[in-house]
Length: 291
Ligand code: CAA
Figure 1 (cartoon, rainbow, N blue to C red):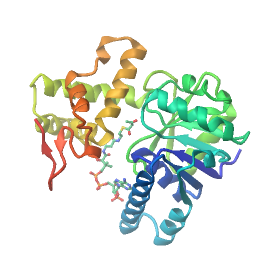
Figure 2 (figure 1 turned 90 degrees about the horizontal axis):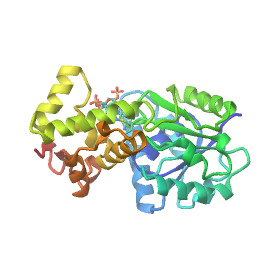
Figure 3 (figure 1 turned 30 degrees about the horizontal axis):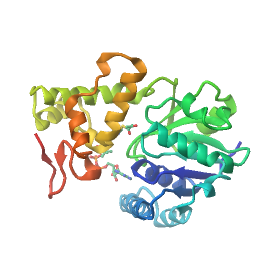
């Protein structure tokens, strides 16, 4: 099956990045959110990120204009129903995602493939809330979507091979690389990455290092492009905590216990860059470590 039209649910940092790369690859995109303000902000972010690509000579101004014209923001979830492919990229909350899938199911075309950009939740469980578990998959992009090469493809227990092959072809057309993962908590990338970040927060909590020394250690000592605490702020501390909770509950192993300091930052509403405060304070000119 050839995919031409794509519906993206959620216009946060992942949804807007996904809309960006699909529009540039020539797909018609409907971008949905419940807030007009979020949609406006997403369109401004996409335009700014494409402008950066134009300035660096990665794409032409014509390609940018054509891609922006292919993205249609909408507040009506049902408008996405007839799309060939739907990608849910709402907040990492299982109940919210299930509610979205239940709401959109009556509006789908018979051939529509449904996917979720969840970074950790069971694909099989989410698929079971729809009328098409065989045409349902995990379609996991990395942040920042326009830059990161990888897309994890996760089959639920019922996903059919045609759906997998269709999505594999979409990843190829986006110019990205697919990595198949089985449907176990947090799949591959986050099963490895988020416990590393959690361990970095324990290192801070126990006073082994400061924010600066921990990030410098991993950047210069292990050649990571960002230190783990800087990366946590970039991903969102609420998302990191949600993934640790899924690992802890899903694998029932105490080695996945979320660090109490991570919990405290989330309780304070210090969620990282998106709230302008996390392990660093971003409210001034340059980020200032909070510990
Ligand atoms: N849109 C488009 N282009 C972007 C961009 C964006 N949002 N952000 C950066 N870029 C481009 C820049 O234009 C630049 O392009 P050129 O190579 O053409 O010059 C390139 O990316 C590098 O950017 P910068 O020079 O501004 O900055 P940098 O060298 O410090 O790199 C980074 C920034 C790519 C984000 C790098 O720090 C990095 O790779 N960090 C780690 C990111 C990571 O680990 N992501 C995975 C998070 S986990 C996840 O997403 C899974 C999950 O479910 C939680």
